[in-house]
Length: 112
Length: 111
Image (cartoon, rainbow over all chains, first blue to last red):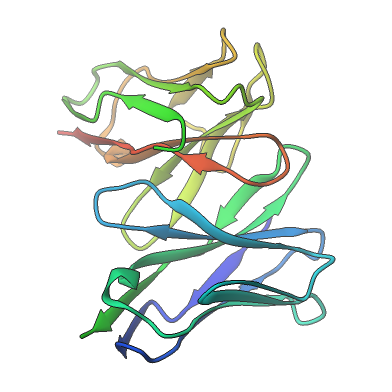
């Protein structure tokens, strides 16, 4: 089955700096790659996604890049703010029901 | 909560007891999923459904059963709870294009 690895497991940045989280996947048939943000005590919230026919996607301060050849994708957050502090999960989707395989998560802390 | 509610929010069970977790969505989506989340392990798919009356196994289905008698509801059952099933359970729903929307979770402790 699919395997998704996520790095780093923890990341601390100063407010205003950029943060980058990286994921690799194993199954070349995966074709949809979402990113979720999870705040303490809440369910994961979809923040951005990318499909395999696109190399990069931006939404205000967040962007995702995909390298299909290398089988890795990354989340970029610019001008970080304290409210960006949360756990971020990457995932890869495969199968007719679009089942998601998740990475193990990155705890992002934005220091004021 | 992305159009989905989970009942109950918290539950403590003793080993061997049974219980049912309810997920209800109001988005009329065909696809529904149950995940469990354990520290340091991300979310893992337990079971899923691609429509009313259908269910399928995910990555970690052992010890769980599910039913989708109505399109808007997806039930997760534990017939004989074990301490290894202590976890936070999340329900999600989607249209089948990959996007999934998660509920607030149920925190289950099995003693």
